[in-house]
Image 1: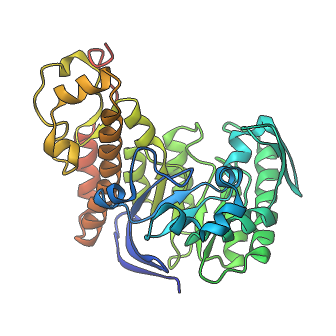
Image 2: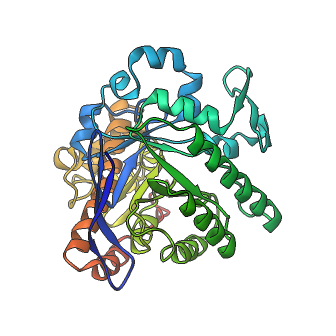
Length: 376
């Protein structure tokens, strides 16, 4: 039911182009996956997600467990039917909420005793809980329950989180029994190379369908992220998909692909879009800048999204400054298309044997950071 096939590997980097077969379709990798925390990608309809080329989207286990709840989700027939999305879905484990909502919970080897961020009600999150919820949600890919920790951290704290993640991975696999759902393990170990190797080897021994790389993009320098990926690249199974969790910054995607990563997700495109920040072929821009007041050119001449084909920078700035909903929707749609198209173009370059040149061209043209004028 699940098969990962490599079509090409770049000899000068670790970049891979492949296909991951799932019950709801074939995912061509590398791939960027939009995040739909509450069974919706903010501001986007399922049809619009298809239009921007989304092959797979994410749902959030913790948030959907709280709202609308698993009784209703089971009655609806799972996440696909509930939200009207017929392509693949990946559900996270709830482990990131252990990190992001740490102030609301207490972590032990048994699991996480926490209180809802909505109403303060008590809950127990554990590997068995994560598997039960994700199997009701019915995504094509489920993630093992893990412990993600802050950066920087001590070696002792990273080791404890690694050991707990391995323990929870075993319990997750024992509790998972849905054959039409792939289960991925999650590599932890913070920025300690040897701990990352240890975590990967312990999970590989358990033989998961795929492997996530967690605990990155949590404040560490980009160089640390790339070093960890360099360490893991030769260790991770060649015939299994690799998922760099929570990473959506364009240079990180390009460099992650060069280090053997197949799958990416992040809320950055949607969150930045709602705030008027746009990623384009030439870099990042803030559409509220006065320099765009009379700029009647496309937002990004190289983009094929609805915004760039039909509207000008001046019009988008006007809508954004007036608080019009259409601005948030169009910026979100554009940013998602940019991230998805970036992965598509990377795949084309890998298949053509030109990925090193692709990296070079990207860094030459993508200039990050708003100018002073754009910040006015």
